[in-house]
Length: 237
Image (cartoon, rainbow, N blue to C red):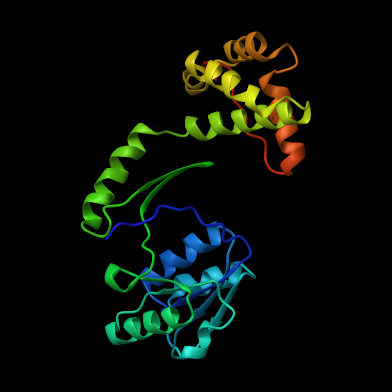
């Protein structure tokens, strides 16, 4: 099987999870983290899903067994039960509707599989063995988690803020490539990793101009996204 790698935008999309145990909980948590609206269908719900539902208005729990009509109106379905005949039925129902369907740990009845994932802010690294060895995918993910630290999230926040500023100033997008490659080649990531704010500002000034200071860029990011500030402290702080 050759899989086609893709990142899905499921923000505000309706997704169905069939099952109410530990595996279902992990699936629900991931869907919520990506902004989905989730319906859980199961006669028995574990405490963890109950707590998620109590804390979020984006989860609906239907306390009964699965029926084929449950697929209606959903973008994707994830089967996370221990009942293999039921899981295969979910897969068959989804295939009839041309829906995205994943059955936990049974790749042969899925039309997509979920990779092992490392997240560092907006950096997403996905590892897949095409279903051949989930254990090895997990091991690779653990190795990559050591290599890719939280500095990558801060670095991408800064690069994203620079990109938005450049676009606002109506730079030709083709010019951005050389600017970003220069910042990368001159070690911006290492400066972020080492929290060398003054050196970051000097590099930004040399490559982009005096108006490009880290503090101002991140303040712009907060205003644009209405989110929390991502600060890069002085060295030694």
